[in-house]
Amino acid sequence: MDLDPGTVAIIQLAWSRRLGLDDDALAAADRHERIYDVHDEAQEVSFVKLFGREVFSGPGWAAKQVRSISGAELSSDAALLRLSHHHGGCAMATEYLYYADSFPPVPPAEELAVAQEPHIAEALERLCPPDDVIEAKLSHRDSLFVLVDDSDGNSPVPVAGAGYSIRDGILADVAALTAPGLRMRGLGSYVTSIAVEDAMAAGLIPQSRIPSNNVGATRTAAGAGFVPAGMRSSVSLTA
Image (cartoon, rainbow, N blue to C red):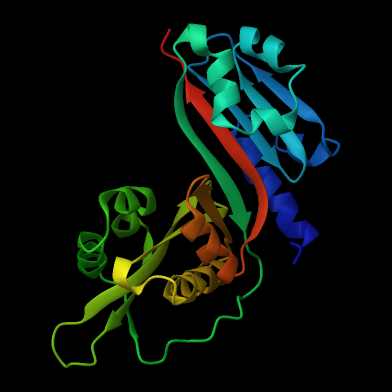
C-alpha cells in the first residue's frame, strides 16, 4: 500500500522544518540525493532517510567523513558511533518511520470498551515492563484510547492502549502498549487503529516512530495500516 502523494509532501514538509531546512528541501531533492546540514557547533550527529531522500546533520568534520559512506551503512548506530568515536559519540536511537493515510481495516473487539482517562492508561503501564512503558509514553500522550475489559462488573481492567501527541502541528505521533499476557492477539493493532482514525479526523497524519529492535511494535503498526517510509539514526557528542 502506497501513501498518497499529497501525504508524502506534507510529511516531507514536517521533517524539513524539524531538521531546520527550507520548507521544500526534501520535496525538491532528487531520490537518493543526500542533503548536508553542517553546523560546527552541533552537539549531535544524525542521519535521516525519508522516501529515498537523505539528510545528514552534524559538524563539518563529520560531514566530510560520511561523503564516501553509503546511506545503507549510515542507517545503523554503529556507523555514526565509529565516525564520532574520538568526539565522545554516544548512541541515542535508531528508529524506523511509519505513516498511515487511510482508515485501517481492523475488525473491532466488540467485547471490550474504550476508555480515555489517564489513570486507566497508568494502570495499564503498571502491568507492563518498564522499558515498554518508557518507549510508549502512553499516559503522557495528548489523546488516549485504552481498551478495557469490564465484563465482570467490577473495576475495568486495561488490556491495551494507544495514543498520540501532535508533532510539528502536522503529524500525530502514535504509540501503543499491550499487557504482556494479552499480546499477539491483535489488540494492539485494533486500539492503534482507533487512535489513527481519531488523528485523521483531526486533520493530522499518523506517524509511528519505532526503535530498530522492537519487532512487536513493527507488527502492531503494520496491522493498523502503517507503511514504512524511512528511518532516523543519531548520536550525541560530548567532546
